[in-house]
Image (tube, rainbow, N blue to C red; front, side, top):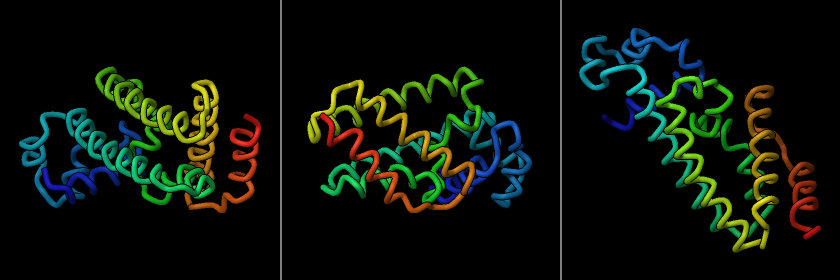
Length: 173
């Protein structure tokens, strides 16, 4: 499926919950007949999983590229603002209640495990944070990112927050 089509579908799921998006609406957004949409995707769940995989790969590439930077403040700020700035579905997936569908829940769990390995490795190798600190750091950043997405729906200035996170997690080891 073409990248631009997947991006358009991703934007629908970014703006709405799974149950709020119909195949009719997707077909309309893509300018195609519903039958054509079913030719590419056998169900809404299959379509969503393909979009989620695409979204996850973008997010993973972003994380890997971000972790090549040396500026910890920039890394944390980007992690907090990425969801809103890039409108990436995977980065906000848990707040949209997709975990209620088993096949999607399993995909999310697999992707989260893969991401967890990347995060642990980076923060352990570069900053010597143990697994518990990385878990807490991820929880704080995820929560801030989701609140940023839910309440503001725009990128926020994170200078004070990132300074506090750095103090809490990196200066008190």
